Image (cartoon, rainbow, N blue to C red; front, side, top):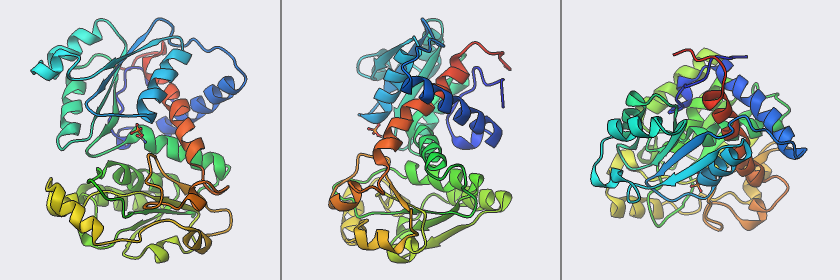
Length: 333
Ligand code: CP
């Protein structure tokens, strides 16, 4: 168990060792138990968390905001427009000022360059910076997903087949960050990862694909890419399916990207596909999902679907993250 996490940023899963993440899961388990029993846990009493959202959010904002409240602190909801960030005040100046008042800062910016912006905040920050989703990663979602899988499979993960499949979710191009976080994190904990995409056009960033392969090799698990959703679902233990834009092919050309998504209909999790999976398989999605396009109601509302547990676990794992990094244990910096 690691006791030296105070002040540590969380911009990407890869920045935390397995031991550090296992520490976080242990704390999350304890905090979830205390939540269940109605026990007050004022670990972060009188501490303030800044939440800078460049975009909208239901789960992430409320997981952080309810989480800090339950730990005895307070969350300040900020947007570029509601601050001088929108007028161009630099990350250096913003975070220097905020760091003299509060104790942690979370940022969401999924546009191209979003990660660079938060890395710049982190560079100058004396308080921990949390990635609330950027263009590359969504680490507070992926750790909640892994925590949920550990719960559902009683910590027996080795050799289980984890499928992350693209879906035909249209209308706009969703970021690659969720899929990239999943393919890189899951092999580190023994899961065999299958990435399913209609074609090479929908593959993820080469640096994420390389990281997934390297992690699989290092931890003795597998990483493969298939171009058929049925093949991916066969023998799966976890089916996680969500859409993203063919950003590696079209860049930010939204119109071309949506046309390519619409040219690949039918990538949707239904009961037939769930039946291809192993008995006891679970269906996952970070939400929000497009019912009818990404998943049928029958699957989304079935006993195999763990999406609401997954969403609740955002809060328990985020509370653990804040308790470990904003709390009172020894700093290593
Ligand atoms: N899963 C997730 O990040 O949801 P929100 O966009 O609602 O925060």
